[in-house]
Length: 227
Picture 1 (cartoon, rainbow, N blue to C red):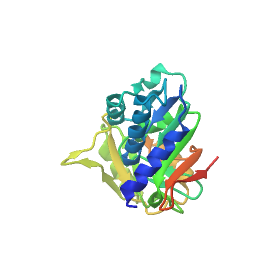
Picture 2 (cartoon, rainbow, N blue to C red):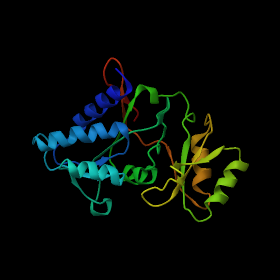
Picture 3 (cartoon, helix red, strand yellow):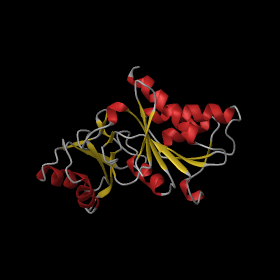
Picture 4 (cartoon, rainbow, N blue to C red):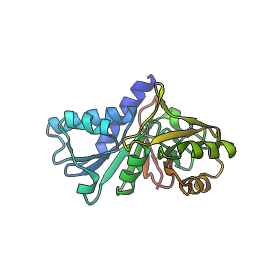
């Protein structure tokens, strides 16, 4: 199977964990699109009823609404039963980098409100140690160049996330600076350092959060239990 087929397999498998009556966090990204498509089919067929979705991006919200899934704002719910989202890297100890799609802030807010978190990935996303995938850092536009310069001085090899010839804008109209670190030896220490920098809104380090990871493999979906 090619990568798209692995993503489809994994996204469809994850819907088995959704039960009628649940409030579900719907992530962002190419693998999640397959999950939302499958959820929409089951909602339309009446196999899953009374499903409420809380999305991590405007584009996921549009996809879900077009498929007939009820979407609510996160401020209008008191909890999320299950969040299903993708990841750009998952390490051996189940730490993650997310935000390749630019939705890291909303993804972390939804994750924090969720009772259970499942990440859906193809096997190429499994790594021994985080860092090969560039680490996204969301920053406010005011003074963003100063933050960028600080990253440069620290040797973090920053680059602006671009959208054509313009800086990429998140759903909150912030910029993203990607850090090309190669390998992250102490992710918790780095996360603490970055989040305390003035101008940084959020980072793509998702640490000690996921409960289960569904991995698409050539032999079928594999479930990894993190905690």
